[in-house]
Length: 192
Image (tube, rainbow, N blue to C red):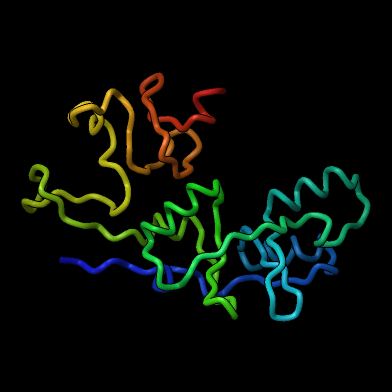
């Protein structure tokens, strides 16, 4: 039996850190140089927010060429998870909070950042008892639904998927996937 993989094992320990008073343009340039999609906004040793590529772009468009500080663009609600949490639990938390990243903290110290990308690239493959594949074992991503047809084969499935999986349109983790026009879509993508 495979052990559960913890957040600490897959989180990104190297992250871009900036302060609230830093120039947003310089922060965006730093993010580009570091190939980071976000930066953690720090006040001393304490994280106080996150600024993402989208936050920076929105601030640039609204500022119309005027200079802006990171504090004007950052998101100040920053969900955190414990380093000992399993990646399945972290995925559930991120899905419930509708966020693409969380900070990993032991309570007193910021240890790293965990993103949806980290979860998907590091998810362990676990054997299941359902049907054979090459090598005689079925492979499934832990904490993610079996995919198409799972709801149809389960009693009471009624075309809905109960486990978390990826929306085929936007790629976000969701518990609310339904077949729509031949794809499994989250509620947001079905509404479009």
